[in-house]
Length: 123
Image 1 (tube, helix red, strand yellow):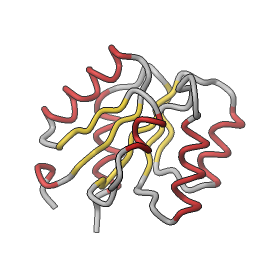
Image 2: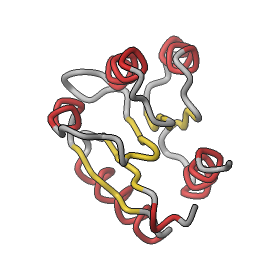
Image 3: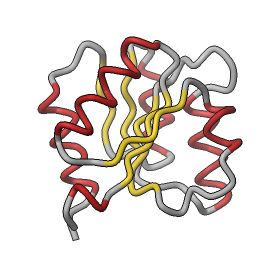
Image 4: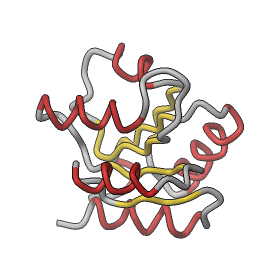
């Protein structure tokens, strides 16, 4: 599938990081949907067009891990790439148990994220 046909949602509470990720995704040809919290993401009625979710862990309210758990539990989880500054290995283990595609620690290289997205979309 061509990137232009793929919606990548980003849930990140740092406004600068959210904006930077949106720019990176659009520059790579993806359609970016940006959300400042897990709650805002969940307010959207239909997520069926989301091909991949880029998710921070510490979002101030509902955490990225909690959102992942909810999506996996409901059977609506797209491939998930975590981007976080959390050093706690317990978060990474929990994310991986729930099937995350990649777990990137901030700061990460743009190429690392784009590579994870390419893996998400391989047939």
